[in-house]
Image (cartoon, rainbow, N blue to C red; front, top):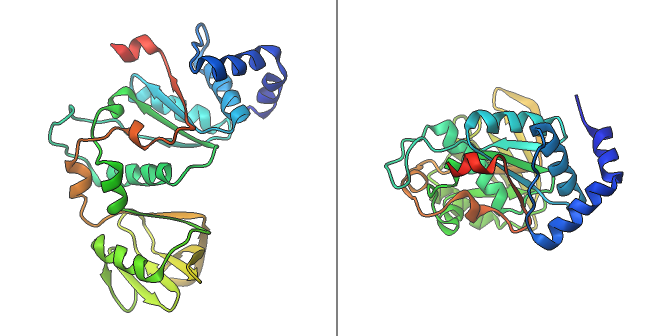
Amino acid sequence: MTFTAVLENIAKSTVATKIGEKLKTAKSISLSGLSRLGKGLVSTHLCQQQAKPLLIVTATVEEATRWALQLQSMSWRVYLYQPLDTFPYESAQIDLETAWTRIEILAELLAKPQPNLAIATTINALQPHLPSTQVFQKHNIYLNIGDSQSVKLLAEALARLGYAEVKEVKESKQWSHKGFSFEVFPVNRNLPVRLSCNRGTVEKIKEFDPTNPKSFTDLSSIAIAPVDLHEFVSAHKATLLHYLPKNFIIAIDELENNRS
């Protein structure tokens, strides 16, 4: 079920217009007495009206998951940012899948995400548990089609992240270089990717199956995580909020529950 028609009607309503005007002047508003669906529709309208991405903060991971599923039905591209299992400054024991998902989310946030991006998370995920943005950018690669990228600097970055240069990429943690084309098998992906760089610009990003040379999937962007996640899991200096661009709209669901 999608809510395109409902959102179009909301956009035409006087109440929605007044709410949007109030948010611009007051910087924050309270939506009391609405169901999750009602809050989702109003939040989606406000973000669409201002062409801004959305962060939903809830009290529990169950609520964050429900929000993520609901927002998907409203045509959002949604990430569920997993909460912490430890207290702030406690030694983090993070599984690889969770770490790689976080890296992809954080990399996109630092690369100026598109307005249709929504992230659902919990209040616990906003505790200090991340490296600073400067350390993160040093230990990760995120590329979009159209980005400026030096072939030499990309090769140096892959080596710095712990990837081994080989003649032919066959398994994870490897990369190869032929002319202006790179093949990389990121640790955070199930298949390798081919990057075509011409005159200092990323022109194509394709995921491919090494066992089937004719199997390609076009991608618009790629995040490449480091082989060694030590810097990522050992630093507790920044929160998710440090990675958010200023244009995000932040919605806190059930404020009193999050305070408790």
